[in-house]
Image (tube, rainbow, N blue to C red; front, side, top):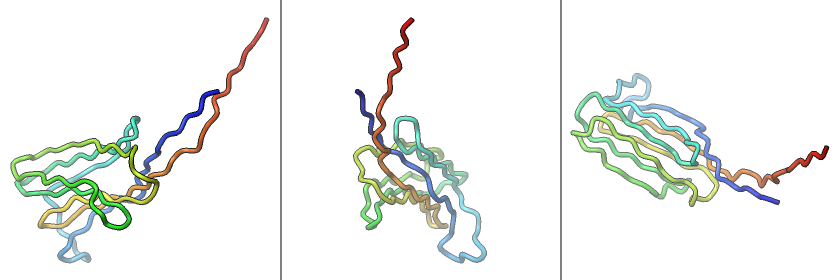
Amino acid sequence: MITLMSKVAATVLMSASTLTNPTTPKALSFDASAFVTANNQIRVAVKKNAESTVVLTLSNKSHEVLFRKNISKKELTYAVKLDVDDLADGQYEIELSSREGSIVKEVTLKTAPIQKATRVVAMQ
C-alpha cells in the first residue's frame, strides 16, 4: 500500500494598491505574477518598465519575514521559485513593493489529505 502526502499551495487573493492615495492609485512601474508549480513551489516573476528598486518579501501570518530579496534598479526582469514544502500550513503573504506602492498576493498552504493508492488486478 502506498501513501502520498503533499503540500498544496493556492493563491487566494491578488491585489495591487499604492501607498499614497488608495482612491486614485497611480500605475506602478512594475508588474508581477505568482503561481504554484507542479513541484509545490511558488514562482514569482517581476517585470519592471522603469529603473526602480523593488523589494520582494514572503511573510507568515505573524508578519515574520521568511524570504526577502531586493531587486536592483538595473534588473528589469526577475524570477524566483520559492520552495514551500518545509513551511507549516497556514496563510502567507507575498509583497512586492517600491516607492510608488505595492502588490500583495495572499497564499494559503495546506497539506493534501493522505490518499491510498488502489490497485486493480484483472485475471482472465
